[in-house]
Amino acid sequence: MTRLENDLCKIDIAVDETYQSDADFKSKYDILLNPNKLSPDDYSKAYSIHVKLPDRQYSVALIGDYNCWDTNCAVIENDLLTILQGWDILQFNVNTAAVIRSVTLNSMAPNFEIHKVDMDYLIYGETDITMLNDRLETLWSFSGWDIFVSISGKRPFEIKADRICLYDFEDNYYELDFPGNEIRG
Image 1 (cartoon, one colour):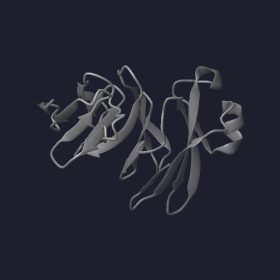
Image 2 (image 1 turned 90 degrees about the vertical axis):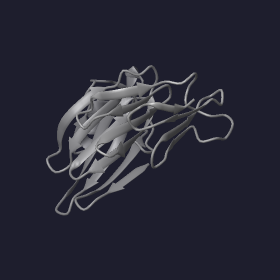
Image 3 (image 1 turned 120 degrees about the vertical axis):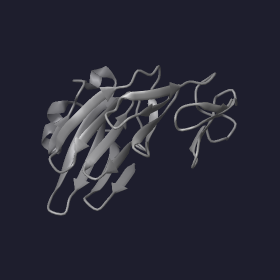
Protein backbone atom coordinates (compact mmCIF):
# COMPACT_ATOMS: atom_id res chain seq x y z
CA MET A 1 0.00 0.00 0.00
CA THR A 2 1.12 3.54 -0.73
CA ARG A 3 -0.03 6.42 1.45
CA LEU A 4 0.61 9.98 0.26
CA GLU A 5 -0.22 13.28 1.91
CA ASN A 6 0.34 16.96 1.29
CA ASP A 7 -1.41 20.22 2.26
CA LEU A 8 -4.20 19.57 -0.28
CA CYS A 9 -5.05 15.90 0.13
CA LYS A 10 -4.52 12.45 1.57
CA ILE A 11 -4.30 9.50 -0.81
CA ASP A 12 -4.25 5.75 -0.23
CA ILE A 13 -3.42 3.35 -3.07
CA ALA A 14 -3.74 -0.42 -2.80
CA VAL A 15 -4.31 -3.33 -5.14
CA ASP A 16 -7.97 -4.37 -5.29
CA GLU A 17 -7.90 -8.16 -5.71
CA THR A 18 -11.66 -8.30 -6.42
CA TYR A 19 -11.43 -6.95 -10.00
CA GLN A 20 -13.68 -9.06 -12.24
CA SER A 21 -15.03 -6.54 -14.73
CA ASP A 22 -15.43 -2.82 -15.33
CA ALA A 23 -19.18 -3.21 -14.81
CA ASP A 24 -18.68 -4.52 -11.25
CA PHE A 25 -16.34 -1.66 -10.43
CA LYS A 26 -18.64 1.08 -11.76
CA SER A 27 -20.89 0.64 -8.74
CA LYS A 28 -18.02 0.18 -6.28
CA TYR A 29 -15.97 3.28 -7.24
CA ASP A 30 -16.85 6.89 -8.03
CA ILE A 31 -14.49 6.92 -11.01
CA LEU A 32 -13.27 4.08 -13.21
CA LEU A 33 -10.10 4.67 -15.27
CA ASN A 34 -9.06 2.04 -17.77
CA PRO A 35 -6.77 3.90 -20.20
CA ASN A 36 -5.69 0.77 -22.11
CA LYS A 37 -9.20 -0.75 -22.20
CA LEU A 38 -8.03 -3.91 -20.42
CA SER A 39 -10.28 -6.70 -19.20
CA PRO A 40 -9.55 -9.31 -16.52
CA ASP A 41 -8.78 -11.71 -19.39
CA ASP A 42 -5.92 -9.38 -20.39
CA TYR A 43 -3.96 -10.29 -17.24
CA SER A 44 -4.84 -6.99 -15.60
CA LYS A 45 -4.95 -5.64 -12.07
CA ALA A 46 -6.81 -2.79 -10.38
CA TYR A 47 -5.50 -0.11 -8.08
CA SER A 48 -7.96 1.21 -5.52
CA ILE A 49 -7.24 4.92 -5.04
CA HIS A 50 -8.95 6.84 -2.24
CA VAL A 51 -8.60 10.62 -2.37
CA LYS A 52 -9.52 12.76 0.62
CA LEU A 53 -9.72 16.51 0.04
CA PRO A 54 -10.74 19.11 2.67
CA ASP A 55 -14.29 19.38 1.24
CA ARG A 56 -14.92 15.90 -0.21
CA GLN A 57 -13.55 12.44 -0.80
CA TYR A 58 -13.87 9.99 -3.66
CA SER A 59 -12.56 6.67 -4.90
CA VAL A 60 -10.96 5.71 -8.19
CA ALA A 61 -10.34 2.31 -9.75
CA LEU A 62 -7.35 2.37 -12.08
CA ILE A 63 -7.13 -0.71 -14.30
CA GLY A 64 -3.68 -1.60 -15.64
CA ASP A 65 -1.22 -4.38 -16.27
CA TYR A 66 -1.07 -7.23 -13.77
CA ASN A 67 2.69 -6.73 -13.28
CA CYS A 68 2.45 -3.81 -10.88
CA TRP A 69 2.98 -3.28 -7.18
CA ASP A 70 1.33 -0.86 -4.77
CA THR A 71 4.51 0.09 -2.89
CA ASN A 72 6.23 3.31 -4.04
CA CYS A 73 3.83 3.37 -6.99
CA ALA A 74 2.93 7.07 -6.91
CA VAL A 75 4.04 10.57 -6.04
CA ILE A 76 1.93 13.63 -5.25
CA GLU A 77 2.98 17.23 -5.92
CA ASN A 78 0.41 19.90 -5.25
CA ASP A 79 -2.74 18.61 -6.98
CA LEU A 80 -0.95 16.29 -9.44
CA LEU A 81 -0.92 12.57 -8.67
CA THR A 82 1.51 10.55 -10.81
CA ILE A 83 0.93 6.80 -10.70
CA LEU A 84 3.13 3.99 -12.03
CA GLN A 85 1.36 0.77 -12.95
CA GLY A 86 3.74 -1.72 -14.60
CA TRP A 87 4.66 -0.13 -17.93
CA ASP A 88 2.11 2.69 -17.69
CA ILE A 89 2.20 6.07 -15.97
CA LEU A 90 -0.89 8.19 -15.48
CA GLN A 91 -1.06 11.77 -14.20
CA PHE A 92 -4.29 12.74 -12.49
CA ASN A 93 -5.49 16.06 -11.06
CA VAL A 94 -6.92 15.27 -7.63
CA ASN A 95 -9.09 18.43 -7.49
CA THR A 96 -10.82 18.01 -10.85
CA ALA A 97 -10.52 14.22 -11.12
CA ALA A 98 -9.22 14.72 -14.67
CA VAL A 99 -6.53 12.66 -16.36
CA ILE A 100 -3.73 14.99 -17.45
CA ARG A 101 -1.65 12.49 -19.42
CA SER A 102 -1.04 8.79 -19.75
CA VAL A 103 2.07 7.19 -21.25
CA THR A 104 3.47 3.72 -21.74
CA LEU A 105 7.18 3.23 -21.08
CA ASN A 106 9.33 1.47 -23.64
CA SER A 107 10.92 -0.97 -21.22
CA MET A 108 11.50 -4.69 -21.71
CA ALA A 109 10.03 -5.66 -18.34
CA PRO A 110 7.66 -4.12 -15.79
CA ASN A 111 8.64 -1.24 -13.54
CA PHE A 112 8.54 -1.41 -9.75
CA GLU A 113 8.75 2.13 -8.34
CA ILE A 114 8.47 5.82 -9.16
CA HIS A 115 10.34 8.57 -7.29
CA LYS A 116 10.48 12.34 -7.64
CA VAL A 117 14.03 13.65 -8.15
CA ASP A 118 14.10 17.43 -8.41
CA MET A 119 11.70 18.25 -11.26
CA ASP A 120 11.92 14.79 -12.85
CA TYR A 121 10.68 11.25 -12.20
CA LEU A 122 13.01 8.31 -11.61
CA ILE A 123 11.59 4.91 -12.52
CA TYR A 124 13.04 1.72 -11.03
CA GLY A 125 12.29 -1.18 -13.34
CA GLU A 126 13.25 -4.81 -13.52
CA THR A 127 15.53 -4.22 -16.52
CA ASP A 128 15.71 -0.43 -16.81
CA ILE A 129 16.32 2.65 -14.71
CA THR A 130 14.60 5.54 -16.50
CA MET A 131 14.49 9.28 -15.88
CA LEU A 132 11.44 11.17 -17.18
CA ASN A 133 10.79 14.90 -17.29
CA ASP A 134 7.63 16.52 -15.92
CA ARG A 135 5.82 15.80 -19.23
CA LEU A 136 6.72 12.10 -18.81
CA GLU A 137 9.16 12.17 -21.72
CA THR A 138 12.23 9.94 -21.41
CA LEU A 139 15.42 11.85 -20.62
CA TRP A 140 17.61 8.75 -20.31
CA SER A 141 17.44 5.03 -19.62
CA PHE A 142 20.05 2.62 -18.24
CA SER A 143 20.21 -1.19 -18.31
CA GLY A 144 22.75 -3.37 -16.57
CA TRP A 145 24.15 -6.79 -17.34
CA ASP A 146 21.14 -8.53 -15.76
CA ILE A 147 17.84 -7.65 -14.06
CA PHE A 148 17.88 -5.20 -11.13
CA VAL A 149 16.91 -7.64 -8.39
CA SER A 150 19.23 -9.21 -5.85
CA ILE A 151 19.45 -12.71 -4.43
CA SER A 152 22.44 -11.77 -2.26
CA GLY A 153 20.39 -9.68 0.16
CA LYS A 154 21.85 -6.40 -1.13
CA ARG A 155 19.51 -3.55 -1.97
CA PRO A 156 19.12 -3.68 -5.76
CA PHE A 157 18.00 -0.03 -5.99
CA GLU A 158 18.89 2.89 -3.75
CA ILE A 159 18.68 6.64 -4.26
CA LYS A 160 21.38 8.62 -2.47
CA ALA A 161 21.84 12.39 -2.32
CA ASP A 162 24.08 12.51 -5.39
CA ARG A 163 23.68 9.15 -7.14
CA ILE A 164 21.67 6.01 -7.82
CA CYS A 165 23.15 2.71 -6.59
CA LEU A 166 22.18 -0.57 -8.25
CA TYR A 167 22.89 -4.29 -7.97
CA ASP A 168 21.80 -6.75 -10.60
CA PHE A 169 20.91 -10.43 -10.31
CA GLU A 170 24.54 -11.47 -10.88
CA ASP A 171 25.70 -9.11 -8.09
CA ASN A 172 27.21 -6.55 -10.50
CA TYR A 173 27.29 -3.08 -8.93
CA TYR A 174 26.51 0.19 -10.76
CA GLU A 175 26.38 3.83 -9.78
CA LEU A 176 24.70 6.50 -11.88
CA ASP A 177 24.51 10.25 -11.43
CA PHE A 178 21.17 11.96 -11.91
CA PRO A 179 21.94 13.06 -15.50
CA GLY A 180 22.26 9.32 -16.28
CA ASN A 181 26.02 8.94 -16.50
CA GLU A 182 27.56 5.74 -15.23
CA ILE A 183 29.97 6.66 -12.43
CA ARG A 184 30.90 3.12 -11.48
CA GLY A 185 30.06 -0.26 -12.93
